[in-house]
Length: 320
Ligand SMILES: [Zn+2]
Ligand SMILES: [Zn+2]
Image 1 (spheres, protein in one colour):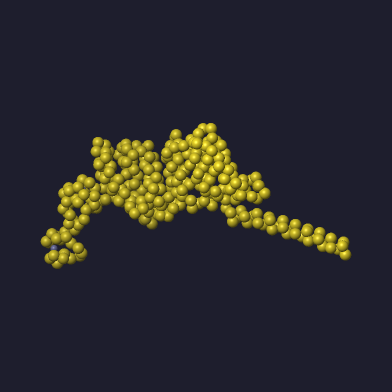
Image 2 (cartoon, helix red, strand yellow):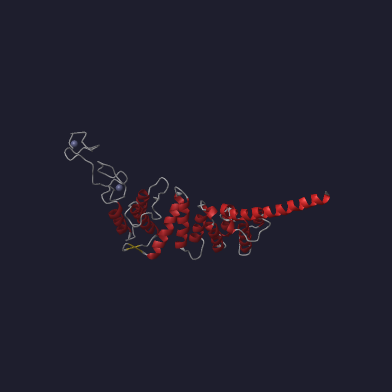
């Protein structure tokens, strides 16, 4: 009897080991599918508790940060190593990317961007726009050799990840594009010499691309701009006009400003009713600009009696 019980026990143990092994191997392959960032995790398997280890490391890191006064050349490599270790144990640790790269952004911007680059490639974090935005910001503000093409691609990623895009993210993207244009020094044959002029030219180009992307027959349909860019409640044409207004007011001595504005009017505002002097739009029947008092060319008047027309027929004399 005793011997029989022993045999049953051994059979049950053997069967459990076999089934357990099968279940474990099928779970491992499923884990890769369920958790898409699993391949980014450290290959050193800490008995399967890497993510718990990352939490402990994070607490120790926060504790370490409390002991230093400022980030300097001495402790930056230590911070970098600690953050790298945390994100290799838990590649989905958004706060570690954010805090780590912010701490390194001034002392060691290359390392900060390297950390954020890893975050940008993590499919689990594909909805996070703050991390690519931060990367673009560090590339365009803190790096010695500012690479605006790289900054642009980070900002582009941030814009594509938020819907509707945050106005300051769109602004950052436009500024990176403008810096690229400023480096080329030329826009449609006009010399580009200032930040604001470059920004205006960029906004015009993006708006033109927006218009083209609305056209199904255009080869650029479905371009990255096919979702219309706007600055929150301010539309792109409004932003273009306000940028042109402040450019005209601030850079009176810049000989390239007026040709740029003339080109803008010809390409975007042909037939639009805009004050020649201050570029403010005016309404039907207006004889003077309400913003600067300049004389404007009136429109929307009845050809027979000169009253402002409100519809198809004149409300004063009945003429069509
Ligand atoms: Zn005006
Ligand atoms: Zn009339």
